[in-house]
Image (cartoon, rainbow, N blue to C red; front, side):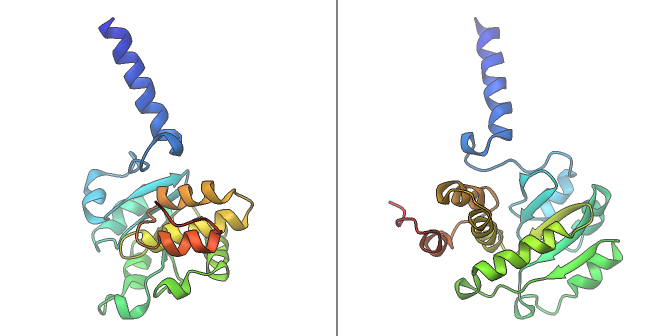
Amino acid sequence: MKHAASIALATTLALASFVPSLSAAPPAPSNVPMSTHDTLPNLRQPREHLLTGGQPDAAAWTALAAQGVGTVINLRPEAEMAGRDEAGEVAAAGMAYVSIPIAGAADLTPANAHALSQAIAQAKGSVLVHCASGNRVGALLALDAARNGADADDALQFGKDAGLTGAEPRVRELLGLPPAK
């Protein structure tokens, strides 16, 4: 009986890692070295070939490139970068760099969600999209999912799987969903 329970638990955990609705947050990708998890806060993989998270440490780029990330998309505006030359850091690691500055809730628009979607579609290899925490990433991905036909609740969940937290009220408003209870 213990063995059957262990198999059932293992099966449930395995399914939860692949089916977002069974899991509160998708696990960090297992193919990225643990040192990268330490240098890239809130690292998530909401779908294949798409990583999301907070601001990577300068030490993360080499490991990400070695794991197949070919493009980094930064949603942080220049004013938040504290003089860091992230474009240069990313280029030095051999990856492409795209900047789509999202300063706050006013920039969470369908047009910016579409710009992010196009940048992801044109990327080579896997893509890392980041902001300071992953919140703005999740917000734009939720808006884009809805724009591409996902039901509003599913789009919101996808955004949460990608890191949406504090911007959820704005995203709910834009998706036509009632405030969270």
